[in-house]
Length: 268
Image (tube, rainbow, N blue to C red; front, side, top):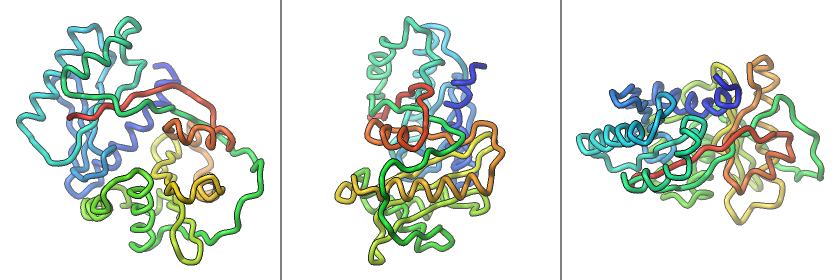
């Protein structure tokens, strides 16, 4: 399998981990060549369908989507569902047309994500602010990290309680380095790095809009990733993440390289 695709699939490994360790998680290989990982929480990216294998043609893609919609009809939920598409799994002649096919089946493009990877960090190119940093060892710090994510991505604050209730992510502190930056005891920014089978996966990176462009996000990122690299120095792919357009320049400045693109579709 192409190495770029293998690196891109680390996102899938992270969601599987969340589903396997969640209080009510679902891990299901569906008959339609689609894989389902879900935590049943309101954290949008943790309820996902993935293509189980490369798509052969348009008919094959439509059959898979029919299977997904049949599952959703039979198992209605009040949390959002996401279809995550690694572009390498689609035939070249179907990649543009597929957006319309997804839309016809109720899945609408939420955004394109850049898979990025590095095995080491570049030194800072600017002076970073002096702040208080705490690593998650208690529910208070976990709550602060999750609340920062709901604020940064304009989610309802009740999502934080849902994540904690369903034990969506924070289940093994031996594998997870969650960092929160504080100023005057107020949480400002956060980042988490998790040990997976083949990489250190960076996730839950968030700084509310009013605190951006001050270096706080970079401080949180570096603190989390540097501690993870010290604790787990010998993973196959090093540090891997999936970035929105907003964060790509920050990650490039730290040393990440672009690997490939993926797309996220939300069922409406």
